[in-house]
Length: 474
Image (cartoon, rainbow, N blue to C red; front, side):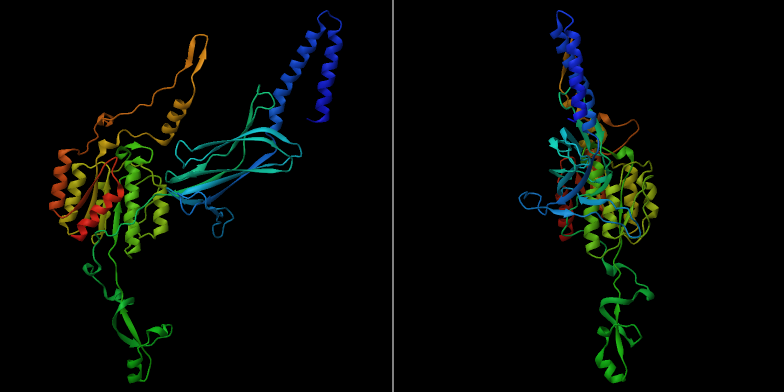
């Protein structure tokens, strides 16, 4: 407490004491004066406590998510080329992080009884909100707050700024302030490493004359040395016979492309949290893209979304992950509208969250054109109604609030979270195949040469990918 404020309180008490001596119950006025002084202090003190504070947030990644004893590796913020702004930090779904929040007191006075609220959106609902209590923070000093969590969901996140509160010294009034700390992070979707996946073999692709010469492993022929050729490719026996340098030409191997078709319709969304049809589709797509890029096959992502642009060129693995992390099911166009954009010599992989007859008829037509097609058929009804992340968090907050009682009983009751186990959540006019009808279609697709797999709400995605591996092995 500053000297001027203490002097003001003493003067207030002394004046109250002199006034109270003129009455028979003077000590009651003294007590009233003390209470009024404490009331005034409780009003202005918290506002002073939350001023001149700042915060810095940093991250460290655990090499092994199950071993918390090993010190994590700090993540340094990257800076984009030709820009002064930091690019978003990138993490992987399922990765364990240690978040460090450093709160600094920029003033000379000591701060007392501070509450710091942190909210990390990619974490699950149980770990998302973190609360810390700082008993005191000296002037020009800082305190480090740490907590560990797991990145539970992929996506692009704008992290909320930390909030600091104080109700010192008696808890009668509370003041809060947001610390200016904007930060953007990207969480890549989880992917698996399939041992094998059905792809069109390179020898089934037609080579052009311009594409035959280039880097490769099989020797195509020889020619005279030209400036810029690598000395490692000189064919010394031919050079000795011709009395000039002769280099080897290699046959360039052109790998067959693979197109991953994504259904981003709003009506194809079902499920809650990370167990939605969209999240399952993206994990499968990322796993197939990882296998294809590692095997040297060009990968194309094909989808239609008003918020993202999908180019027609092949994408490298980092760009595929970044694009899949930002994808949202906000489109209206059915995937049958994209069939004509698929290259004729490509391998097609398509997860179907809401399989219907027109879509499966389109896949059969592609197969009749000699295209290699693989599809994952979802049991749409097993995922239940779709609940957005915002609604899910709001329902969890309402359920966690305690009951408030007054003279007339409970003033507020938390609403129960509504869940549906039956397919009654289907919108009017929304059609999809399920049960025996879907099994009949699956049998027809397999007889036509389309490889299919089944995926439901509780399916293990690794097992879904392994079903393709076993069929390729046969």
